[in-house]
Length: 264
Image 1 (cartoon, helix red, strand yellow):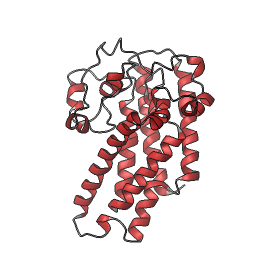
Image 2: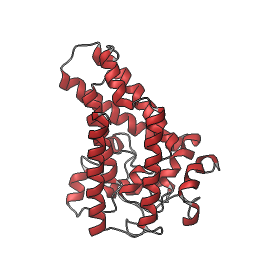
Image 3: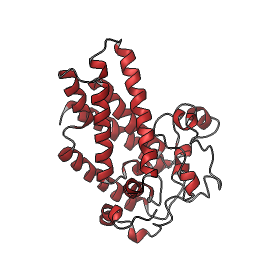
């Protein structure tokens, strides 16, 4: 296992275990599908995605950063700027790019068919953060790889970005509640579970809001911010209208789901 992958996986596993422990001690809500079923399915999808990335991404964004550095490719391998400045620009560009990518996956029907594997989870907890179809994960990785090559982002910057992205996604999918007024304070910078939970609402208007994964700024800047759900967090339903049957949300069907129907 290469060093970059080992570091990212270590951070990912540590944050996931912390969030699972928090959810176990103080769960905010209980859902239609049992937690053990959902964890098994979501982690199964994560395993499939890991295999797909290792087979088809050629080393991923971190490898692209090393390749760009070695071959003097990309903007910041061609111009002379302070390292802190290039690092900051790369982190901001990559983060806003993931925000915009998320919107595209909602608005382009073919891509939504992939992304709805994430949204058809009838619950909402830290393992929902890894519930994605392998094709979506690969497309997202290819997008990041292209950006990294164009930017000439340093390998350490890409490592930091991916580690932070993964950690924030696990945190903001947590089935937990941060007490007020701390939640409002944290939300000024980071996306909290209360903020991102709205994005998983059954209400389509709320689903098309709060697209960010790490900082909350992009939703505020681009007017996709929704502060509270219409029915409140206790009554808000999770998921999508077309997929409400627990029996139809097993591992095998989720892999086939994007190819079964084009309906939203």
